[in-house]
Image (cartoon, rainbow, N blue to C red):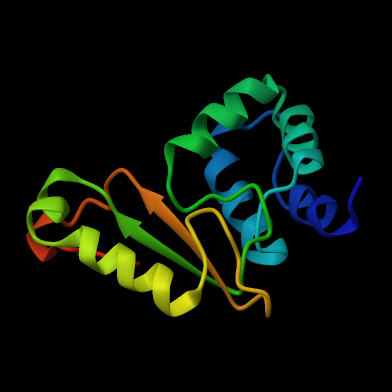
Length: 128
């Protein structure tokens, strides 16, 4: 098991599923993403199927499964943002960074992702 996430798991009692999100947050804060081997380790530690871990982790936009850039930019694709010009913002981000969604700049500083909704429609268009 990867030493960084094994140290994180030791801080939480085994089988306590309510600790899933804090564990995933700590792993991502430590590694910059949640590697596949961490999913298996968390599943074993919390005594739950790995598919449940993926189900929770993929529900939240904050969790990533690839290292990505040091700065991860998310641009909203929700209807409110589309109405208020998010397409122009997304196009300009891609042009300035020279990357497409799902890519990371060559220097490893920035990664770009389009997300369904960031939940702050009143501030549209939204990037995070």
